[in-house]
Length: 441
Image (cartoon, rainbow, N blue to C red):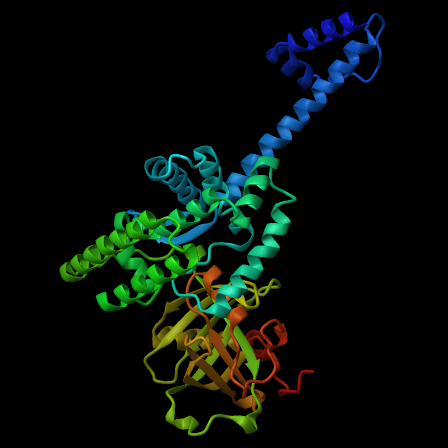
């Protein structure tokens, strides 16, 4: 019987791929019937191989989907051509640099484990996106970690077994290899800033306006890494100092030469992240008229069933007019603003009849508990919406960074209910309330 099983196994192993492919095309595989002259062991081996092939195929497809999703996560650094670095590119750079640094500095570390950690270390971002830690407040850092813990629990059930095991081990930070990879990971933004468009990144994404600002940020990060890693790998912390210095030199040189690069964001990167609150009209800030303000008129040309919209807006100064297209959404939405002329606005305005909003918008500076600067856009509505007052805050940065700031934000005490998710308070909805504003409960 054992000999028959061995023969059956050998028969399965000898099936030629082209023969199997033709059999599959004819939908004849696998057979579930015991044919005359076919041994039971042959059928069992046949079915076991078919099950194995299906399992292998699923693994291959799931791995491809994993990498596809991973490659869709954009980070904040920009490569030389101006494109955002992706998580796949970042992980490959880490998997190249970290093992070689380990072999140079700490040859007793497990190089293969370091390489595997490097490849999986950011897979959590498949679920939550990349959030830069360059200038996060403690509250924003806590919100980032909360999101990542939820994502980790989900991914550990979905990732291929080896990746799930490596990611879980890496997140525990219980091995020197895991801590080594995490510290090298912290160095890479400085590396890409040197080789890519780092000057553009720190100015556009982090608000760095001078070499002193940049040096201050680098100093804070150097202190942070020392506190986080406790001088376990002193050469790496010192390497950060060298890389930061090299980028500071590049920044000064590019500023001096005034080499400005104007590469527009791709349309699918333009995301508006904002929250909206109701305000008690009897509890407005003092000296409201002393703040900058504008009398806005806006009308809606089109509103789709999914919530996307096209509107025009006048800012009341006779100079600024815009056409805006927004995608569907509540807190996070795609947005594109296009400047138009006074003549174009006047030509389009009649088409918005029955879908208009008039309000005075006050721009009020506000510093939150994490010392982040915001602008409160306080809208006091007029016309059929008289009596309604709302406040909006738009959070700067890429969608992933801005959404963390939005969720971690604590509003001032004079703000009322958060209606960010209530579609009735979207301007497109308010515009259609032509019979007067009523309290929305």
